Image (cartoon, rainbow, N blue to C red; front, top):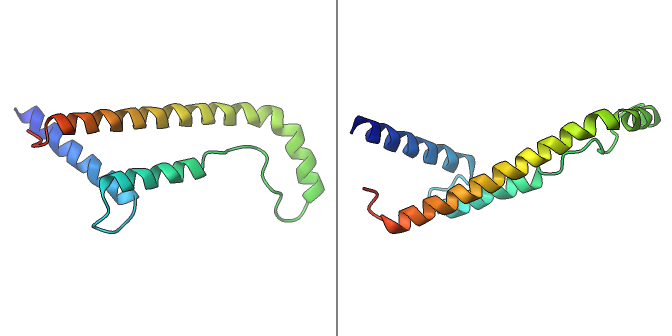
Length: 108
């Protein structure tokens, strides 16, 4: 019984933290919070060595970037693959939680 209350408290805390990461208005539904966070993840999705060169040393930075791409791009590809898997898992978990909440709306 104590484990169930600990899990419930942990789940409530987790929900609160997820909501805090999204829109700040109190009347925003949880689905909107999730979509807002998901949109942010989608905007930050493209990670690559190909970024605009800012500051001095433009041609030198461009040449160095091309020379280092073979080393940097595989790590970025791995990170994109991880991000994709994590977002799909989160979406799946959200769908499962939604189904469970529809089956037991009282939360007992």
